[in-house]
Length: 403
Image 1 (cartoon, rainbow, N blue to C red):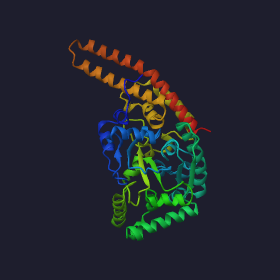
Image 2 (cartoon, rainbow, N blue to C red):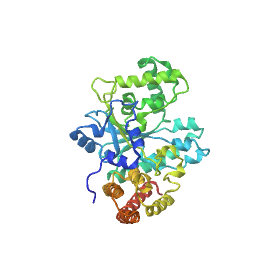
Image 3 (cartoon, rainbow, N blue to C red):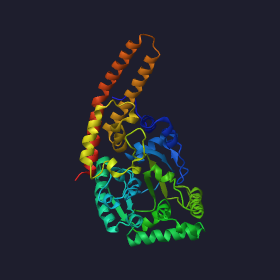
Image 4 (spheres, one colour):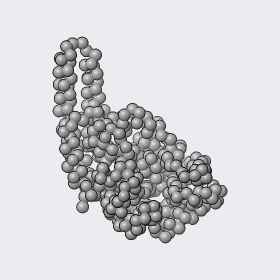
């Protein structure tokens, strides 16, 4: 049993080195700049976040104000991640799905309808791959997202899905961009931005469109997506586009989420920690090609290799692939949270005792023997936890991605 309840910040201290942790924790949000880190909230509000966003709350880092009338959770599926866009065989990538695509499409929240938009036409234009290929992927993704939500929430989800190729959605987004450029920002360059339709999905203009098309019960919704979507650290090919983007982000600042009289009064946001690579560099997995992450193409082999990695000494945990994958896919699971907490407590005990040994006097060979004995002892305690963790994480990923 773990010695104490472990928070997301405890997990991040074990997952990242101090420099990485400080950098990610201090990242400025361009979308939803008033969103507050969960650990900075008063205890009663932290408990409210855990209740409202259960079980996604275990990975949520920041939240904006929320409409008291919130009736749905929204997100979106990224049809191709950055790590695959840089590959030559993009058309082959579309034929599979990655675990991070599924998990990061939308937060797994109980008790409310969940809506996702799939950007099939956007990625078809970006890659030249026929939109029909993305639509086939969309059908496969919908099935996997349902599996993920069923497994992680214990409920059959009320999942609603729209494609950007849907004429009503596409025209609605086109009209929204024109409205924002011409009537709100008074900056026609906003319409020139390739990302403008995506940016509109973080406004109440988008949620009102969804409500008008009956995808959500009303425009009172919360967008639960990865933190990086709200950091939105994008760059632009020329100054005029950058100025248009800055005009848009200033409008967001002037119209904060879920605040009375704001243009975005009905929309709230919550950002959760993205999936990261298992090595010490801790790149976001979306920057990696599909063969480096669990996917429908490699899930069985991936699960077997994960079990093999339990043989290695697990500390520091930031170098442990098993620990990382448990955080990526399993924090919603009470058993895995307990295992994560136990490993963090063991890690703290190991380094505390090892550091105490370093300052002790005595024969160097005796000190070395005591250090090796400590390592063996801690390793023996950690091994069954790590093995069970790998088994349960493999079950999750196989259930979601398998045939």
